Image (cartoon, rainbow, N blue to C red):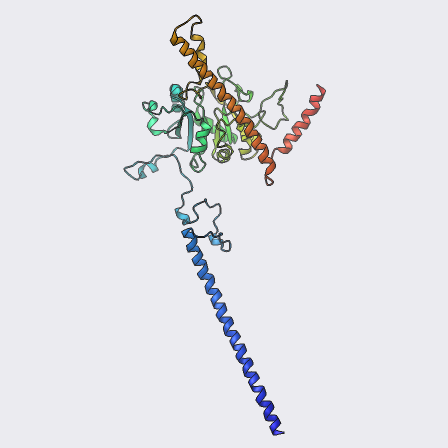
Length: 419
């Protein structure tokens, strides 16, 4: 029996040793692998961050760490520490010779007046700007005729921002130079034409009414006796402070108490609009880069009214202006489109070369002006199609006024069939 027992014992002990060795080996290997992967995670993360800073690879933002999440981060600033990123700017001019600390302690203008101008309307523009206190308004002039030096003799000229581009509209300028991040400090933006008379207008009283009424998009009413009026909604209502709606009970395009869409309500014209800061952040994106006349834009401004356009868009009656309606764009120097007005001054029996030359010049100016008008109509059609296509294609966008417009159409149909 002893030989048998010794054989069994000898065969069992090596198996136990092998198993213990195998388990020990596996544990050691597991620990090494774990340490490797943990170390690799930290090393790779740091290595990728360095490569990302150098622009060699693209890395997705780390969404695991709440402390490092950066919402609405400006494109292109991802490589910079947050505290150094300047997201906005302003139109304040800075002195070359000091830090301007003394100037910063003074009251800074909180509003912006931007006007497209030609030197031939210099007298009118001067009267407009003199109405706007320098302590409350920054002035920016868009020179569509290139004659910047012609304004130097005016007292306020050196403090104004002058931008020049031949034969460009105020909407072309606004799209390129009034980005919301540039004008973020200004509470209200007056984007006006040059052919406005302001004898009965006070900008500070106007803004007081706008704030009181909660108007995000507005315009001063037009004096109907002296103005060129394109839309009845803009006509001043004597004795009123503000109106938002107008009525038309005859003919096509009727407007009544049930109307919910422009031009019956929630609408202003484009010669003298005033935008709040929040509404301008929306309107700037609505302006099309290539449609410089902005025709058709007025009908969609209500979408930028920060709420109900029937309440937040209106015309201020107590502070009103005169719209002269001068056709100034489109001439040979950017300021002669209205030359056709003077054709009648040439005698019909005149045979002088100079008179014939005048007729040719002014007729060409009239033709150019008509081309500008035609282009405006074409742009309006293009803009309308873009809006319709965009509304259909965007599955995530809901038209807040769709049901109101449907109800308005249904209400009009019985009236139309009974006539």
